[in-house]
Image (cartoon, rainbow, N blue to C red; front, side, top):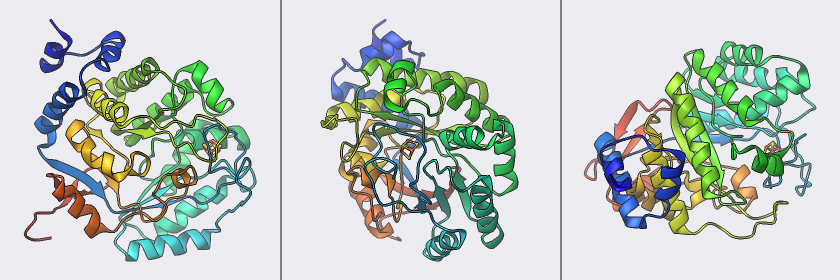
Amino acid sequence: MTLVEKVKKRERLTQEEGEALYDLDLFVLGELADEIRQERFGKKSYFNINRHINPTNVCADICKFCAYSASRKNPNQYTLSHEQILEIASSSIANGAKELHIVSAHNPNDGVEWYMGAFRKIRAKFPDVHIKSMTAAEIDFITREYGHSYDEVLDMMIENGVDSMPGGGAEIFDEKIREYLCKGKVTSEQWLDIHEKWHNRGKESNATMLFGHVETRAHRIDHMLRLRELQDKTGGFNAFIPLVYQKDNNFLKVQTFPTGQEILKTYAISRILLDNIPHIKAYWATSTINLALIAQEFGADDLDGTIEKESIQSAAGAKSAMGMQLVEFVDMIQSAGFIPVERDSLYNELKIYSREKN
Ligand code: SF4
């Protein structure tokens, strides 16, 4: 049986077969991924109205690819107070945001209560907003810095109002590449362990992969397969998000941007390989909006959201600093031939936008 036949029969692929997918013609691969996407979601493309809040850029870790952390090239340190975080949340929720996506650098100055107090205050003031916060890397940092166990931090998150976990900090799971990129940060095994513990509490999370830097195609496939293995056990990942490496203002010194073809192949392969993770997200903040729109034909069914404001990827050169207007976002999805569906953070459908009655 050929590889293409195997995919058409929906058989599971191995590491070697995953790597061989990259050798297929881009459009053959796209068609295979699109078939699977259409089987599950037709022409629907999901997004949510969210606000990214990055409360501090002060960081004790030193990831080579990072342009956001204030401990390296960025001299402009900031840490938001709870009042400032609440103010941002208030204005975003007044503008329609239903999810607050809160991700911080690893600030050694503020203690666990700075995190938990912020969640508690947001939850008290806005009982309905979805709080997506604390990457596995942040959780691991807190346990190292303040002497808590993973279980304690995860329980505190739930008690204080966190609904789901973002997928950040995964980078690339291969241990050698990881050691080169971000020595000292959460290990691959720990990242997976934290998500497993979260899923075992009945909670959902996202998973990411940072690609297009020093990793090989084989490392990407290995990364996806480690996620697939955990997902077989827990079923708690709701989306996989391949993040395209941004080259500005960091210490990695990789100055090339992966080609559009390589990015689209990676989306398509993730759709084919990750047969147990429902949503593949083309996060336009790192892929560019134009490529994210095309990615809808290569297996991606989710374009993240309007974002409103974003600091981490834009520090490294992404054009996402000011987010996007809802009308513009919906119009672009429709013009690309897809049906925009506003979702909540757990993929319940809130509004289907038809051309006639937006
Ligand atoms: S990627 Fe995160 S943990 Fe690493 S240096 Fe940047 S802010 Fe710190």
